Length: 400
Ligand code: AMP
Image (cartoon, rainbow, N blue to C red):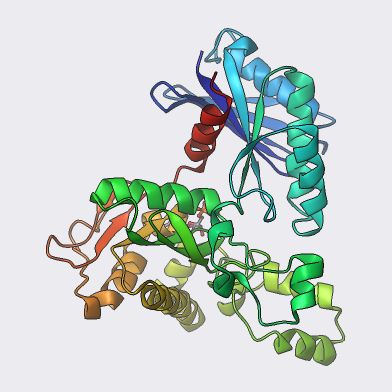
């Protein structure tokens, strides 16, 4: 049985997908919310059939996993007979440091390392680890694999990942650019090379992962050469609620002006900035920002313009460092749904002979070549599939 269960664990949530690796199709997916909080709820969706919900309080992730297994094997809503039909489990882990440039089979040592990297990802790594330990208890003997969000970015050259701060901070605390959304960037870049028929060893690809969190990567032959996110996911593009790049002196200035701590200002930069902050609080959801712009809200208009301008700036920089670009890809919520962002960013490379075909670009969520046939750069909408990327690694590493 070649089914891989992919798990993405948050501190109080657990997203999962069961994928049949024979045809790479999802059998079921679901979300457990409010784990260890009163009002726990599991929404389970056997693909192609109706969703169903279980509302039952669970005390921890182990109990949540047990209910997920019940749902997967339920005689009415299930998709497998019993848990023995699950071949292996793949876990999304946010921070793997430089130690893990690739996914890895989880051992006690790997768990210790994940714990060690928690100070770099305090919101995510401890929750990821809870998921791993819960699965180990619920399904003893089934192999677990960790796929790290940071793996893709580890191949960046030193000149791209080093910050211009005293070197001792790099030596002592591993402060460097890591790049996040790595599984998505890797998957989209690899699929783009296949889709556009490019040379797998030399193709220069830029991936714009534009969701609530947003990042851009540049890769050559599928190997990352630069990425807009840094030590944390705060750096780079303007996002739903994150500021992206700012002058670090702004932090000190706000602290002094408003008598706030550094932690408080960082919280503002993470949770109250981005298009939410720029629009004067309209929303972090790009659909709401677009609607507000259409209603004549000037702050929303400027927020959208700045969001797109920042993307163009990064794309231009990455074209320059790679000496050109063969494929420009758009993915995630905004990238897959917002044709205007794709049109504006794609046509910004007009000076290289790139052109978006407006008619073809009128599409959502579907793998599509949106550039004109004579465009010098292949521009495409490439839906991301992080779960499948994790499942592929999990299967490859555990296959007997
Ligand atoms: P993600 O983080 O990948 O789930 O993406 C979520 C973001 O995609 C949200 O800000 C949504 O507003 C945005 N999004 C979804 N549909 C659209 C759309 N039709 N136009 C613009 N943004 C969209």
